[in-house]
Image (cartoon, rainbow, N blue to C red; front, side, top):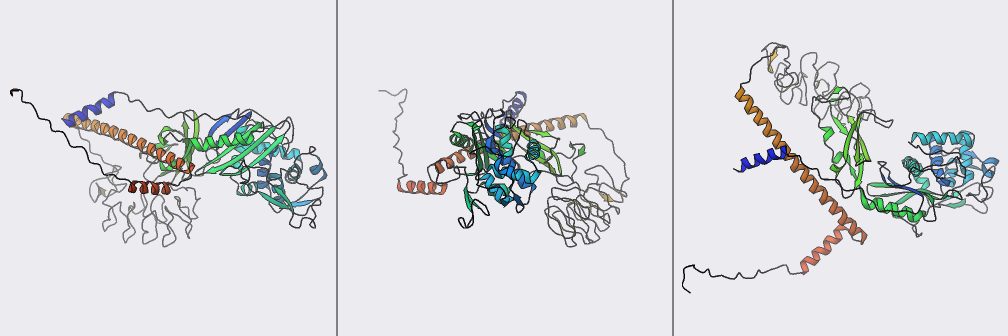
Length: 596
């Protein structure tokens, strides 16, 4: 009876459409006083909050982030920069300066510290002249680099950010520029420094400044002695002109998330606006590693075609190891919707065949490249010297490479299995003598597939080969898997049957009906299992979210999880947990016919 009820319930689940649980709404509630602003997650480019983020504004000195990035990419840090008269004096009066004079010679490194810490406009001009000859030519280079980063609402006219009606940017574009800049370790090291000393300056002679002229970073959010200090802030740039107002770019990292906050046309609230956006981002969002949750695209059926190529047994697909998505803390990974695209951008790895883009509602939240891992090509490590395929492993001594990077004896490499005595290799490549391939027909008719080779170099498929080198297991050219019969053998037995023959037979109607019912039961069972798995994953995700919120609350009050557990244990041990239930009152049943 129970089985019948379960079967009826399963049919009902199939017949009645199920309503999907709605994903939690995208967090809101942050406000800023500046005219334009954005907070963006650096790893994925996910915009967490924006206000007029695509509206052009004057950037002022945050322009120097792009100037520094281009200089670092174009020059050696020890190159000497000579300051011209135009570089020093073609600036606005009372604008930011590091005291560098005409004729001073500093290294590119010194100039970058002056540029990013002291916001020296003469250093911006001198670096532009050093790279491109003129500031105008350097401005063209700035616009080209900005376009390559995906900036669509910006135009740069000078390297410093001084007032110019043709010099403007958007908060979103500025976040993209900062996103590229913090991927450069040299930029982060210089930009995140608190102080520096500039040597060999006319206005700061060695007699007066033997250790060099001191300069300090204008950004306050990583100065622990300042009220604007923000835990996790590590890089950024300040800016101000009469037309631009206060501008500020700040990068901060906590846990697995790095956030970029940009303020444009601020009104003396640029630090409080930045803090509000960073608090909003860290408090409401989480970063999840895609490869730890996504399983759909790495378990494809053998007959599925991707970009015109059929996924055979010799092909494995992998998602990028470090790719992530950023979603609300109240949501689970399954709330993000994946979209498979075969259009690859310029940053795609050489072995990428597609990319999986994730959205949360209409909001892009991350992506991962789908990598080809075992079709004789490369998998992120380049082509081996001997032409054999690689699968994520390192380069072996002989130039060839296998899967998991282990080295074979002869310096070729296998795929997680032993090497044949003659040094041939399996899984995906055709060796010189044609033996021991995975899925291919060797010249001598032997076959290999993840099994130890026999003494004659032939290999079986999950089974030991017979003495004559043929295979009795589930070899790719056996009758069980592909329907092909090897010469001289049929059904996996040498010497029997004829090649390329097929036996036709009719299935009785009763058997067909039974098979149909069985197939229906399998489908129903799969649906029930899928629903249970979904519910379980949902519960696990909710439990994880509760745990993260609990840890965050403990951190806010200054306790670690271990300290809190220890306090609770002491509390439990000091209280009495014994409980004696009250005795049940015995009720005497009255017999309906008893005399009163």
